[in-house]
Length: 437
Ligand SMILES: NC(=O)C1=CN([C@@H]2O[C@H](COP(=O)(O)OP(=O)(O)OC[C@H]3O[C@@H](n4cnc5c(N)ncnc54)[C@H](OP(=O)(O)O)[C@@H]3O)[C@@H](O)[C@H]2O)C=CC1
Ligand SMILES: N[C@@H](CC=O)C(=O)O
Ligand code: NA
Image (tube, protein in one colour):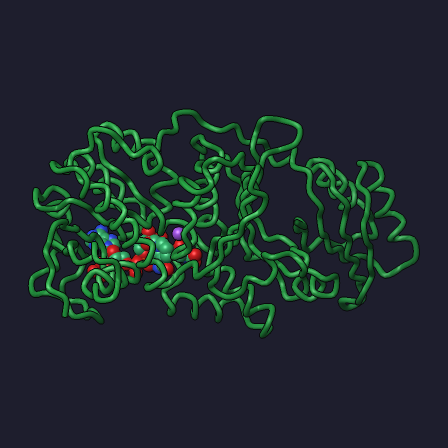
């Protein structure tokens, strides 16, 4: 048992999956960095005092009075792991106004209210740290702020939602049913309280907005980030993708566009060639591939959700703040460490999706008769859509199933060609349209 010399007090807001993992690490410093022995939990704010907790806690440490934690003079660092927008946002702001440094895992709050929060933090002279908010336990926020900051970043491409990667992996490897696998992800503590945020790509959109902001040095308006989830990814598409040499992944992408100064920032299910490094990232694992000059490519890989992994990121942020404070005798920041603080003022311009240039995969159900493929080809040709492959593999009832993969095409042109194709008498439906990396 380690005897602690307490120097820093943490007010922990939340004792769910991440809060419990965080408390476990803070209460068990043996064999970890010695600075951890100087950090103590002051109080833990929860909703219910009666709830069974799978952790041994000091007596009377739980409270329902979260405002008292963020305003307590004893507290140096407030750790927000409540989730949701409110009261998380208000408590973060109140903590900042009371001079507390903040560590949060809450990408939903940061991607929406980052402007307000970082402006308040800079005015109050405190840090807001968010390593756990993207990629769970994977260090990616700190590397972007520090080790990679000399690079001109060209693209950030990631699998940043553990729940959907877990679902897609099991649908692919076991042919499992979507809803059953989602229930497992919830049991394992990967999913958000409302898993819609995971399944519909909103959690990944929050995360890529945060990564894009760090990578490209400006704020991002979340409403300009395109997001499409995995609800419409079917077993048929997984099987066709496999036959064509691809796997389907929910990718979050932020990249410079070749023709304008605007960025493309988006989340969508994507066919990824089996040889691509992101294709082999399975289960709850996340990976973020960053391309920059002069570094080239670097990929961060690890567990993207779960109690222990996320706690590792939360506690490392607490330690980073404690380490900075240790060098200040009065614990007041007169000057910020520019590699830890946020200094963005301007918003990045985001290009509309119609201007994106990408490859597409599309599946058509058509009448099974000669000449249909030719008619599709004519419509594609009318809009400059060039095909990489076109295959008719099977029949669904009496309808033919035709799958195409295009070469790079402007998204707006591709959709115009589909609008024309839908008017063809021989075409029954277009059950899926996916982008190809
Ligand atoms: N789960 C994961 O793997 C990861 C989660 N995150 C983020 O971490 C945050 C927390 O997630 P997670 O731990 O999974 O969430 P949980 O739902 O498991 O835990 C939330 C905790 O916050 C408490 N809480 C919520 N609302 C209130 C309120 N209004 N008043 C008082 N207490 C409240 C709950 O109290 P009580 O226990 O009494 O109900 C609970 O202890 C989220 O922002 C999430 O996006 C980030 C990376 C990974
Ligand atoms: N629900 C999220 C948790 C981590 O951010 C996920 O599944 O990735
Ligand atoms: Na992280």
